[in-house]
Length: 225
Image 1: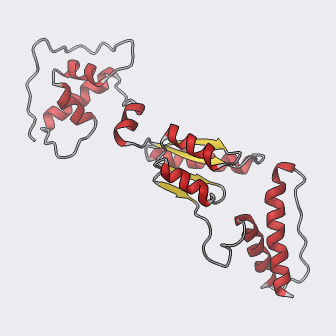
Image 2: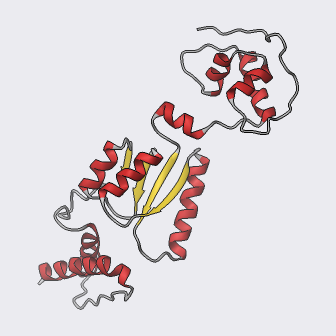
């Protein structure tokens, strides 16, 4: 569809910014074009042939007014936001985790996405409610989500969930962290080590993780005997 418009009567040429949030209607008034044409340009609608001069006039008007797309409305249209949800376990957070979060936020910002962190206390219902509220484009965590949590997030419309539960290396029947401990011990065993010590942290928040990894180490050592 070809859109080629001339300024409407009374079109403004000022760049006075409204005191409220700037909307596409404000951009239409500023540019002297119809709201439909402005919407096509601002939302980059496919299958719409907008003359370059018209497109440029809309973009210049939007820049003069300081127009910023309204995220909730965009989410309603697409069914998904620009949020990437990083689910953290209730573990103590140190400098390494802070660097990881900062790095991830920087990469996602360059891609036009926003990183949101959430400390998850467990339960697929909680994750489902959070994902329904945020409608994130993707969810990733420090360890694989359970099948129930994955199913709940899929039902909430999440397109990408990482990491997936392990399916190979003989780890599918054990907790993910147990598999990590097992691989660590196997790495040492294959290099000739026969006396392996395992140090557990004394922080109670890490007890489940530490004991699960110890279980993996114990399995690997038993299999090597």
